[in-house]
Amino acid sequence: MLRGVGLELPPGALVRIEGGNGGGKSTLLRILAGIDTPTEGRVAGRPRRTAYVPERFPAALPLTAGSYLTHLGRVHGLTGAEAARRAAAGLERFGAAAYARTPLSELSKGTSQKVAVAQALLAGPGLLVLDEAWTGLDAPARAELDRAVTERTADGGTVVFVDHDPARLAGRPDAHHRIEAGALVPVAAAVPAGAARPASVRVHAVGPPGATPPLGLAATPAPGGGVLLTVDADRSDAVLRELLTARPPWHIRAVEELR
Amino acid sequence: MTALLRYQAALLLRSQRWIAPLVVYAGFVAVGIRPGDRALDSLGYAAAGLVPQTAWLVRICVGAEPPAARACAAAAAGPARVHAAALLTALGGALTAGAAGACFALLCGGPGGKPPAATAAAGVVAVLVCALTGAAVGALCSRPLVRGRGLAVLAGGLGSLLAWVAAFSPARSAVSALVGAARTDGVPLPLGSLAAAALLAAAAGTAACLLSARRE
Image 1: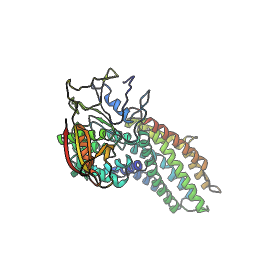
Image 2: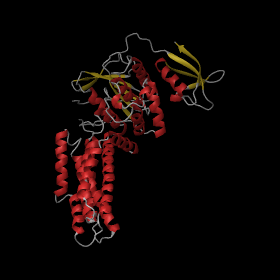
Image 3: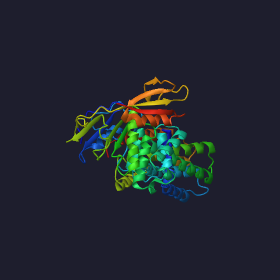
Image 4: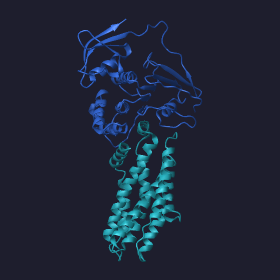
């Protein structure tokens, strides 16, 4: 189905794959995620934590959403308590907290999909493979998944996705490939001509004593205490989320756009 | 691997699909073992019933997840490990049932002048041999090697029958060792059959696990 595919996925990259129906997008993603092995060739250097979201998740499993996520969290390598905590947080994040005790077989298509997405994000995967994962999600959950993808890449994870919506994460992918007649061809960067370099954002944050900024950000001491973090504008949400959800959380004094 | 085993065990227990093979096995043991039978005879019978029961449980366990859920688990842990966990869960379930069947056989059966400890040891080995053989049959006769329900059920039935009657089958040699010894002196300990069954199960399981990453 696919032949002569060479694809390098650096850490922190967001990669979009497109192509016609039945062209082999899903096959490629399943091979990347390690679900299927290629007949010839191999995939080298796959991160230890890999997660996959299928397009449809009609999981007629005899488990509740919460217990399924806890089990999968353990399979992803978390401890039981951490898996349970993140399972609850994941359902909450995608607006499905009310379904934690609902059997998977009774969930609607959209809520099942939220469970599939939450499953993939449980353990902060080094490689996240999304096969039209947005399909069936409601608007807030789609936006949340966009944010989650940005967070993963900001955190050094690689994200590969296929989506039928050409506007999905528009302008964000670092690489863009199209499957044509069984071969993978790069698509020129879709940044419109004359687009300005994205602005930076400066965050003034005060951390708990002795804390270092998350995500390995370079920080400069700020006058009057705390640190100044300068990040790309499209990463700022992810950085703020990291700071605010750190344990113990950071205090944000100011956020300022730089031109 | 522990996490995968817990996941697969939860799927098996909560699906309640284990009930049918367990009821069939319980019926098989209850009908075939009479109070006062020779213990070795009864143990051989209880062990023999495990072959199709284990193959059936393997089929249930490797099919417990719908493809989408299997893909998610396979991405997290690798398809071979997911498949191995399903096989081991089925084997664990079958051994639990086999232990209960063997206890029933020991409690019901008359000792027939045999030392009870050696009789029990022979029963344990026979149960292990038959469960491992049944697991090998199940692994070879279900996904990913045999797809399609009708074909898999037919193959599993024929495979179990073969494991009962074929001269090379470790299950057959272990069961006939027990049943034969019930009428003569001494108590056998069919460790050779156990080694053969372990090898057979390991080979079949490895083949199935390696092929589980093949595109479906």
